[in-house]
Length: 157
Image (cartoon, rainbow, N blue to C red; front, side):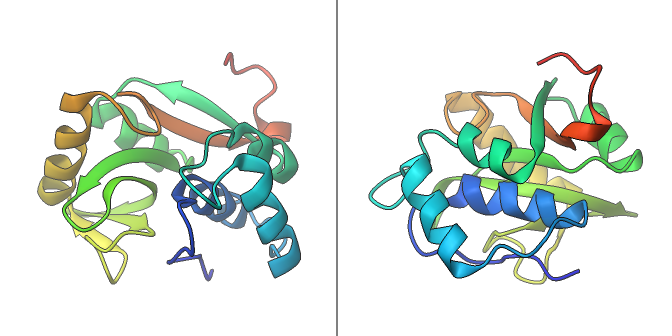
């Protein structure tokens, strides 16, 4: 599976949503749709203000889960990717998607902190903790599990 690993504007949440769609086997997002989504969510000249539109277009359902590592590990174990707010020295607050775990590492997408996609859990904890202490960013201190709508009919928002 080939995921998006970079962005052009302030659309890290859009990249996270598209990667979640790809995780579930969704169709490739062509450049025309990508640019349309960038404008619809308000990310061409700033952060993605209304990313919910992209979730609807891509057929995804974001569900808040507690900001605890047991909840993150459980979600990954059952095959549900999780959006995480992180703080990185080169990009500031940033949205990444955790998609897999193996031993002492977790696979996160679209971050310079893990150029090959894999990062040690202890290193990820440092990035997430910093973001949660300030309590701003894409998830406002919560992790967000992302499910396909057809698989998530009974999950509350």
